[in-house]
Length: 306
Image 1 (cartoon, one colour):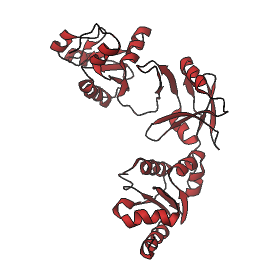
Image 2 (tube, one colour):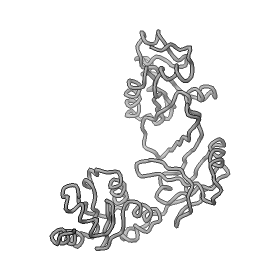
Image 3 (cartoon, rainbow, N blue to C red):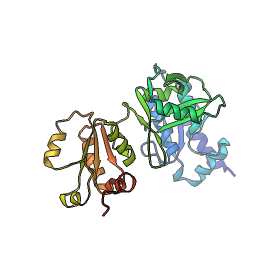
Image 4 (tube, helix red, strand yellow):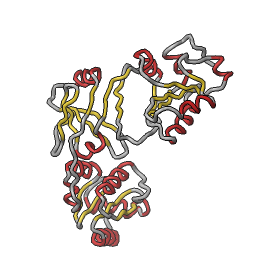
């Protein structure tokens, strides 16, 4: 039961601030993924808003749900009116309607250019159930990707790529230009890999089967083994160079866009080395997940395990 005191508190917060987000955590440190998504959207729109942390008050946390007759948090209010939760806010933002509601100038976003390799295009065609839905690509503000079949929504771009029609909402389009989608072999059969030049640099995971495919194709890359001589004497990947001082000096002469793969025994030490390279400005740095141990199990059993 919503108490009169809590009802008055909620009404006061809504009347006091033009844009109010009832959320978990605060706008500087959201404490759930849904709250974080709405905070990021509001920051991108650029309109001041007030965040109310419902985790600090159990009565408020339960009361706002009853007040709004909406079962989840976060909840966004604008000019005293309830707008919706995370999914509704995302949809309104993608369509440009949230910007209008908030009085912000809508950004002119061009249709993105997307590249789809043939094997990936075939995998998408094979997955089409014939319902008439089209392939959708969504790119969140923290560069998480979703690929699925769904209906067209207002404001969507229809992008032609690899013989496919791909739907991209306007919010995703800002982060999707230049994306390449390819199909790579994995131990489980295969998976889509997305390469996005707009994505901030980070260490990317690389499976041993993907590395084997790259080597078999003759892709241009540099592989470095961060282990010591004793471990390399036990087992090594032939293409991997020892990552010593001379190798580090060599790496610093390479273009920052060079594809670099770091490798160790199980993947821990190499990830730390890869993170250092990213911090130095290299944009295509991969960590070999599972290290040489996974290479021995899944690619070349002649390589000794230890």
